[in-house]
Image (cartoon, rainbow, N blue to C red):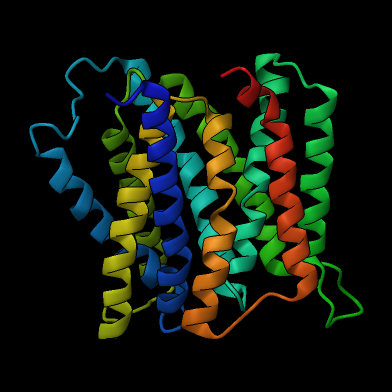
Length: 295
């Protein structure tokens, strides 16, 4: 029989592999359509995939025992997701290589540690502090724009800074309430909020609902592995292991995306950016080292 901890690590690994595919399929779709069009169809299909799981007897969907506090929590998480996810896909849209945002995503785990220290009074030791410095240094290296003397940072780096800070708040909030609110409910809640937000912008900016067939196919597959599988397995992992331990596995996402971006788009980060990505991963591992020693 698989232990609870091993089950959590397995779920985190599956979420990492699925999450790396999100960068590739979303970038392929965003190369053809606008961000509001992408958001509408991405989360429209995400609701379809999540609904299939919700109606399954073992899907885990249940809101019968929800209190007013639980609904309020879902509302707050939904608002947080709008800021975090919109910034995330906007970063992928403006970045020439999806591997760059994937490495910068490691900043989320830095913020999880910092927020845990500030909000939950968790101890922030010397090793964790060194890891935080490494993570920030790596993110700085990735963000450098060598082609412009008048600007040190890309638009993608600023958007990922916003995205990862809000994702960290989401992670802490979800972890706190994961026993009361099931993963499939959290995933559907996320998709609903983001769908309506995208719909507002789609109508306001007068974009058409019609998109190219290839873009829709990329969205169909991407939303299956992203807002469906990745969300489900990310939240499921939090039921069995601490958020920091899941972060160690998920920090390797950038390496999967790097290989996939090279195969699909022929793009490859510069040696300096690869170096920065590896530094961010090393920083995450250092920050989480104490958790590993407790096993």
